[in-house]
Length: 484
Ligand SMILES: [Zn+2]
Picture 1: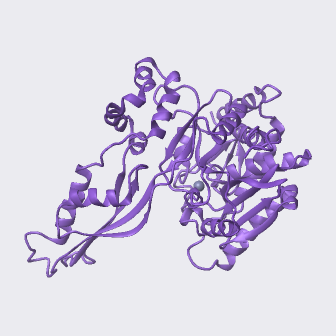
Picture 2: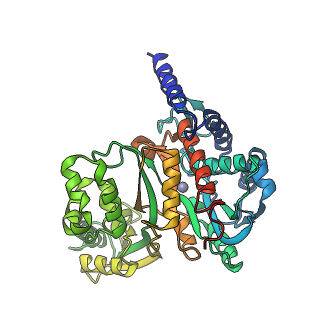
Picture 3: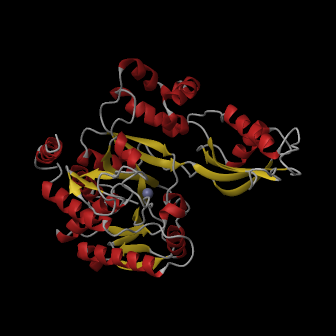
């Protein structure tokens, strides 16, 4: 039993690797090399540093990480101008023949922490050992986001080795604190803006080549984020007189607050199916089971019906068609026998693309409908602009690179639910996409920020093929030098 499972996993992994035909398909050596390099980077635990100046040990970690990158990708670092932004961000420019229409590829070096007792959380392999087993690389950061960084760098390194050089300036940016607001990305964007650099296309993390992502869809779905939801943090507060717990008033501060919270959950935000979501649904339509196919094929003309149906297909799809509000923190009295003079709750709001932070606040005020509940905005960022899809050259370039690396995948745009460094770049670029060319099943997607994060070696191979295809494709490559 104990032996059979690893054996079976090994067999499956080698089958997956060797099943790839020659030619366009991912090359086994390319995948192995990427896996070994990723494992080495996972072993440097670049956990997102706390705010403020870097501690000595954090500075040493990020320095070690950079040294490892330079050792693994000597040609990239020899060809590039490299500068540090913020505390640990790395901005690289690989000069092309033209400065016009530069391309910016982004990823982040930092990872979310693991609990001290990671074994109790259920990790099968130590999170920072970079174990390669069962056809996978295991560890924190393998999917989010060191895996994506590695495949981009592998592709570029191998192209430079082949004697290739980019036609247009190629920028690479590797954030150092993406998991906590991305100050390094903000700084990099400021630098680019100052220099008048307007990336023609930006590609950052976000979507993936997702399997088991859509009901009845058997093919992998390459979901590319064309926009991302806005984010707002609000604090609700109720003040009252307080006093001794033996003589409570009829309505306490926590009681009034609780009413407000229930009212918020009882009044979900209205649904609105955005054009990007319509394009996604129409894109998967030919590949889903019959009853759904008919509905999705005409998604554009069935918006109100979809607005009612989609939220019932699970929280992930529900979040795609409306603003959401999550109650995350609660605070009342500091002592068990003292009345609270102030009760507070923190609400994390994700604002739908097509709506605004103001609209979200207005909806919440109307739902609460109680002047005793004070509402304070702690942080707000609007939804991102929508990047072009459909016939746009950049969108087609992404689709072609997906076809080269994952021939059976269906490429569709979507609205990203989480926030990424990409939101900072929208200001200077008209086309920002969010996508890691890595195959991920449902369990893998759930392992991001959780236990047992791992990436398949074959997915790394396909990821390298994706970036090679993207960088040398028609839109970015040499066959289209004069277009602008
Ligand atoms: Zn990430």
